[in-house]
Image 1 (cartoon, rainbow, N blue to C red):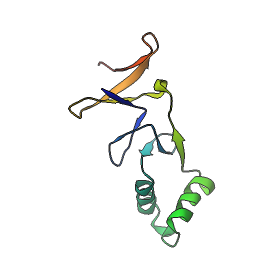
Image 2 (tube, rainbow, N blue to C red; image 1 turned 180 degrees about the horizontal axis):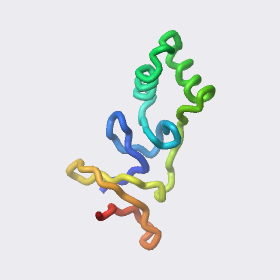
Image 3 (spheres, one colour; image 1 turned 90 degrees about the vertical axis):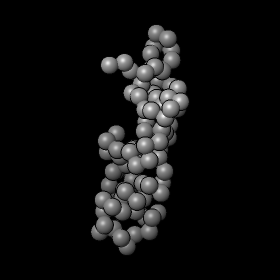
Length: 102
């Protein structure tokens, strides 16, 4: 089982660092996907370069930010050997992440 803090909403890949949108409503792992989503959401900003658009979104509008989840306690997702995703959480008793059983 491989554990991740978050899951990219564009690629569905696990991520332990990346872009957090709206304080956790959407996540993007790669800058290229982040730019594509910004371009899709804000077509009126088409005259901006990718760098300008990202700076506008982060610094001016506070729409998203880059972050890392380095702590094992941040685990929310697990991917098994067959490629299936499961919700996960950190267990403070065992000091390990575990799959959430419903």
